[in-house]
Image (cartoon, rainbow, N blue to C red; front, side, top):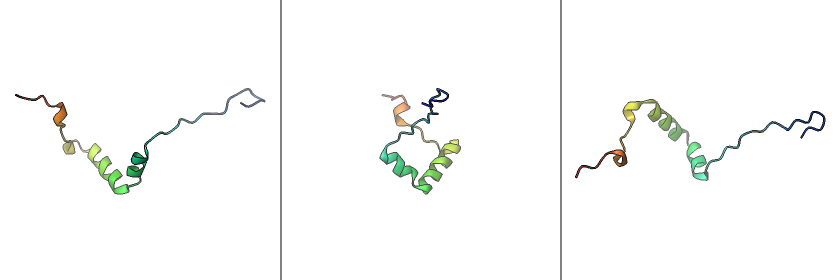
Length: 55
């Protein structure tokens, strides 16, 4: 705390990620491919888990 003004120092939000995620983000080709996939809806893949099963 700043004793002259009584103000607390500014706080910075923490960035939390796993070591695995950090390793993936260090791969520029993977990051570029992921961003391209997210930007182009035609590249989306439907999840089997979301489809109703027909017996």
